Amino acid sequence: MQPIPYFQFRDYPAGLEAEVLQALTAAVGKKNYVLGPEVHAFEEEFGSYLGAAKAVGVGNGYDALVIALKASGVGSGDEVVVPANTFVATINAVLQAGAKPVLAEPDDATYNLTAASAGKRITAATKAILAVHLYGQTCRMPELLQLCRESGILLVEDAAQAHGATYNNQLAGTFGHAAAFSFYPTKNLGALGDGGAVVTSSAALADFARKYRNYGESQKYCSELVGINSRLDELQAAVLRIKLQRLDVLNAERQRLAQVYLQELREVGDLMLPVTAPGSSHVYHIFNIRTKYRDRLQTYLQAQGISTAIHYPVPVHLQPAYQFLNYKQGDFPVAEELAQTSLSLPLFPGLTAQEQQAVVQAVRQFYK
Ligand SMILES: *Cc1c(COP(=O)(O)O)cnc(C)c1O
Image (cartoon, rainbow, N blue to C red):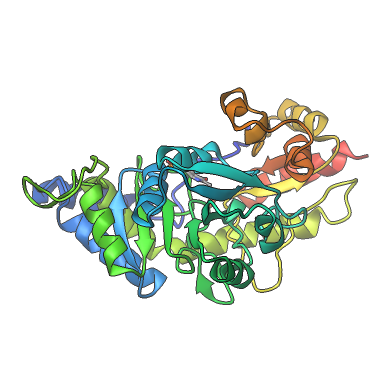
């Protein structure tokens, strides 16, 4: 048996790689390499895919978060409620915007932030909730939106893992004041390098994002605000335009693979499988299982050539870099438990049935 990677780029659906190469060659031929026709077309197409929202292409998902927060008016003196279990980019973006991240416990079934836990962290200084659609499952948006309305604060979405995911058939990234997407290559909609987008239904916010990503310019050499350089690359936009056409197919394949795991690993040992809440859809950016034997299972699988990953091994509040936030062990028992027990199985478009069966058999064998 060949080793089974945790993730690998494969030509799925067959022919996609050739299409991407062709689009790249065509974009190179247009000789317009910064904020050219491909970026503009992708912004239009991604906006209309999401439905009505405006999309502004930026350099990466982190910048998209920072710009979404700044565009929403988040800054110095503000607090932003964020889930305690997320990738550090979410937290860093809040800090970069000049605000203070205030962590909140995730739900122990969906691992997402809930209105109940976020509500407990709201103070007079809270400006926004930054909800992360973790692993590809949308948060329960109606409750979060209601909480924000009642508290007079904003909702910003970190949709970096949730391209194409929905809540009650509405797409992630279209609920809040603003949303951030990442097009890091392994994301559900991935470029061949870095990329990101700010999404908003507000013309004013989109306008801010468009200026801010390009030195504050509305016209060449006319800066209306102090901006940065965080432009979506023209060639990446050409790649993304092709891949966007296949996003639903790619997500459907992830969902099909997830169903196989959910079926085949049901009631195996002490495994806890991902739960999709009513109303939410899950696009399985990550297929996360939980077991108290996590480290032993990971070692066992690796010995058989099966690679897995851990999202995330140390919660943010226990990382050395974030000691200044003044949290301690025990502050977020759910997040801490997730870090101890979570294991991500190989799941990516192009994973073969034979490979997936090998993973299933190895996991079952572990518990025998
Ligand atoms: C990937 C990711 C980001 C950051 O995206 P980059 O493009 O890598 O900067 C932010 N938040 C979450 C939840 C992510 O998974």
